[in-house]
Length: 330
Image (tube, rainbow, N blue to C red; front, side, top):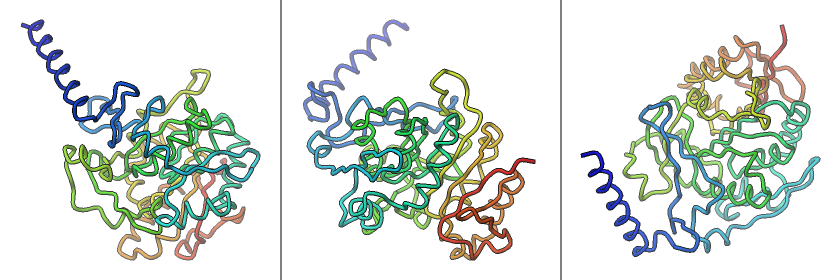
């Protein structure tokens, strides 16, 4: 009976392959989906939700669309790297800024790279890399980077830049949204002017199904920070990472993400966290979540800084646009 069902399954698979060929969803030359993202999904320790791991060995758009993506070399900060951008008319604040100046957020990048250079044995975790500037620079300096980006157009550009720089062995790219719940399917909106930095914080409903994801590349499945434990890579020598630097840029959703962060912080000795801060004072009804996040970090001996100046925790509503947290030794 088992052998019979195995034959039926293989026959069905063959018919499905022929169907895809006839519909031109795949080609015999490069074996790719023509207009859809290729998602390599696997479950997390038998849970019902999954990661969408981007395979750098294959294209996951048509070759024609891939070739239209514009890229340029960055300015040099110890190293220079290729960065691929969105249409600069649609994404003026990140892609447009980078295309014009060769760098985005230079002061933050420089501080970030100082930590990366001084600590080559740390894992870099980039949550919300946008078009991948921080991911590409860190990996170009030799660090391994776990990069988690929900927006299809951004992951496509990171994919191209990583391949152009031959950094496939250093970057693990996951196309999921970080949230306080796993397994939700949400729409990631296209906000023109800041396409790479969309704020889905305000667009958490309505919910969709995994079936809907097959036909809409702007849908993404949520995972939590705790889920990342299952995709933490090993060092290049095969040993386990002990310490990490995390960069957050998820447009105000960080306090929700930290509701499910405890296991990750128990697993990894997080030394430094970079994050944007300008969203939090504006969301009055979410201030208790911001304060919970601050408390979570303070309890783990982390202190907030801006330009090497320690910030007053009680005055968090007046903190600057970008900050970073550093773990203080007892």
